[in-house]
Image 1 (cartoon, rainbow, N blue to C red):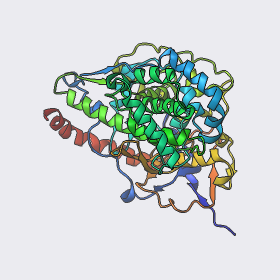
Image 2: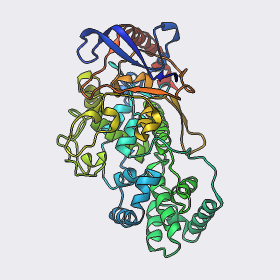
Image 3: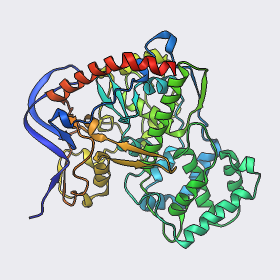
Image 4: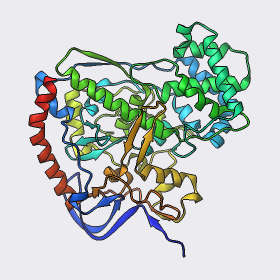
Length: 465
């Protein structure tokens, strides 16, 4: 008989506490691995002060100007429709980027106060938001659903074939054949490519290079074309061998890195001059995350109805949320009742629930690619971005309730990395709401107390630097 491995720990008689109202219920608990019952093994929250703790005094407020993002031009949507008629089937069936490309048509109205309010609670040591009531974060599931990026596929760093290498060379030559200043910007690249009458495969690759530069690796300070995405565009577009790539981990790594960078600049701005930062696409993904997970307080009051076939991002297209100050955002997100742990489990017209919301056991991860994607979302790993220096920790075991499971003491690393030859997935019903174990709550309260003592000393030192 084959050995089966579980991604969860089952506890038959556990006191589970609701984060929202503090009520305790004795029931079967399902904890996301890796977890522990020993305090000596727990992956602690760093004692470095959160920005929200540093800026609690009015004379220590961050002074950051977060400029508006560069929105796609009208020609971008028309270009997508033109190429979708040729390559739409490939985007769906071969490379898995159809939803991501279609999501890029939708405009997320920028709201810097919501972004800055969230960043105040960002913890670089865990890559989570450390709220007073617990941890939450942007997960691979969020990136997969809100951005449409595939979780499964080949690594973005796989070597190129000769044909793919030639496509990269053609893009490099194209970028040098026009004004360097104009060509380096998104607009110049798009205008010249639309008019370009060269090889069809190169036109496709050039389109994907612009899409990747705008929506995957771009840092907050830049809106330029990036030659380090040319090899990815070649892998996705090469006619003889189009390759599905795991883009979601690269996007999430970039978002985590950008959040930490923005957080650090906000800390420095508490004691120095005003710092201006340009918003990049991953930060717009953060806004979508805020709308979905704080629907009653941070989102526009009435989402757009989804039409058949539309991606999730269409719910928030061109909608403006009510004005809030950073202080009001901070107040909203510190209330646990305002947080929606599983927004994608809710029923909406024309929203097709993913297969893993069925609430059943699934015996083999290879039977369905969507189940494999879900498994990847649950597995701690190192996220690797497109830039060489972009590596970030992914720790879903710290935010188990975002996957409909219960939260226990999280371990730092997974002992199961090589054991999932026969994986049993148990996905709770859509209506299930997770809670925390008594030992987790005790540890969490002790951690908060220890942090408060550390903050009183460390925050003053940070402000003086």
